[in-house]
Image 1 (spheres, rainbow, N blue to C red):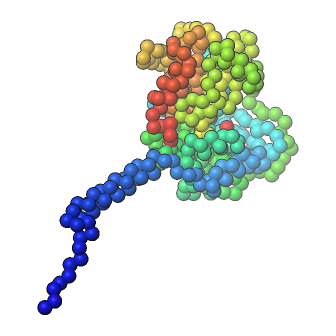
Image 2 (image 1 turned 60 degrees about the vertical axis):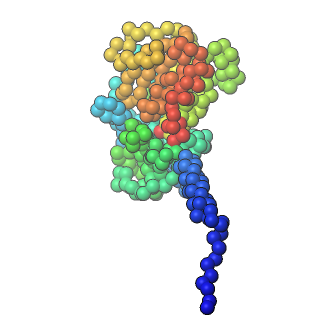
Image 3 (image 1 turned 90 degrees about the horizontal axis):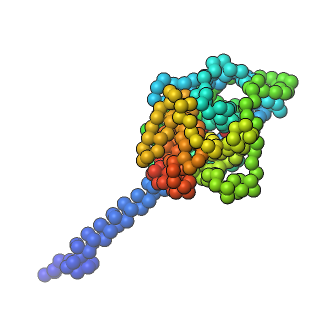
Length: 360
């Protein structure tokens, strides 16, 4: 009589426990690997980067005319500026105001005119594109339409996968047709784009732009001079929370008390920081919203850009940006409000939280 043969348990009597333990360990390892993958920013799409890389050359080489709109979305109604534009290769772009918005700079002199405006449609410089790819994942999205023109859409995404910016690029010419900045909730906070666009036949080179020059003579500051300014106590950090890198420093004339304009970008949004020696005269900020926390007072206003003005350590600071509120708050926190600026920079970086991993 034959006897049924049962193969021995692979781990003896404790086999089920060992197998169960191995299964649990593998499940834990898979879960941890999943967490690492979830926290790691994905690689950018080369095709998407190439599309953005070509926008600057397309803006220089393509003759066009039309209407552009810039819109800022804050807590109140959207603030919209409409301009007419005409561009010929090799010349300046003529710009005429069709619906100018009253600036919020009455208390800050010529700062608005000196600030770089975020959300432009002139394309990316190599440096700006490198910053964009460093701070965000750049990918292709579904194609769209702008001004009845087919557009290839590119998204800049944060580490959590949420969209931080979108770009519509003309499929025919490579021109940037529209761009948007979005906050962490997916709400658009700033947008710029063509409302009307006509590709024209190349005409005589345009010799000058209709836009008036800034009221104050702002001159570029060389790197060696920046080091001297820092040694003299001027706060000029190379980086700000959220991946914003210093792109240039300009200095105004003596009539403005030698104010500095520090230009930063993360590749998507621009931040202008103005620093001037002296004390803040709060009486000139009537009508601005007064905020305060941690023993500091900041005056804020939101028109076409976010404004923040305050005083600290013998300087007056003004921040202008199209970036989301969280980024603006972190930049404000990074500069002195009584403590030394390196310490404030550290605190600002700690406040930005997970947003730091996430519009020339």
